[in-house]
Length: 403
Image (cartoon, rainbow, N blue to C red):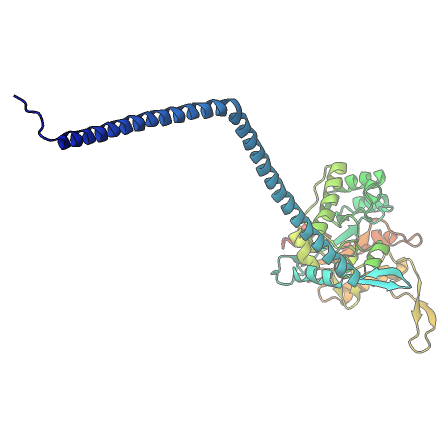
């Protein structure tokens, strides 16, 4: 049995507790509803932004990515252009240095460029060949113990080839012939003459051998050492560029290739420098260019065993050192044909080895028009054959075998 409360205060306390509990429940319901609303809001916002992204932002982001890629490519192109400009700057600086060096070497008179000094360039080329060990042979005489001699011919103009061919054929001897175009031209010269080509083929059938005499017939020493650009351009017997193994190899190859195309004949490994202009460096350059065997000519106290068939001037002008006046005197290198024959006979007599191993030089044609040396060839050959000399090729005179 329940008893009613004895005091109204108890009801009052129960009411307060009920009221507090009611408020707590209402707050919890409000908080729960608020949370649901917040979650619903977030879900709606997420859904909205997702839809917005796929509808609007995706294309915008793609456009931004494309712009970024384009900017990246532009930056790469800019770096590439910077590299090119830097390289160009270095190139222009180099050219400027070259121009400055060039202008510093110009010789100017009356506001005109009259020359260009190549001393520094020549020195650089020369130094390249100073430390190279000897790789060449300079052949100026064969075995002096064998009664053999060689007569060699440089092509020259080739005008006397038919006569010389007839002399050699009749005497039954062979010779070594050195081939050159005699000038730097690429469409005319000694090797472009049909008559010369025909004659050289005939010499080949006699058993003659052929060496290289360079294409342009430049003076090789002057072509290496000349420091005046003006002289190089004005003088036909000097190369325009400083001589090295590349330019000399081209000189050799042009002769070899042209001669083979015209005759079908291969040149030997022998070569001869035009004008006999050689030194250790020239011989080294030639050896590096593929021609280590240079053929010179013999010499004794009578002078070189040279026919001097290219000397055309009987007299020369000589300047008197004291007065400064010029006077004409006999050219010591000019001989009549009869004088030359006597000189060649004397050469053999004064030499301790006679003509043993001796190498003589002549030409198949020169500028000399009168009293030509080729006319003494029959007597020269006959005279020394009667003395027991055997005329041989260069390849035979150096083989230490009696041929």
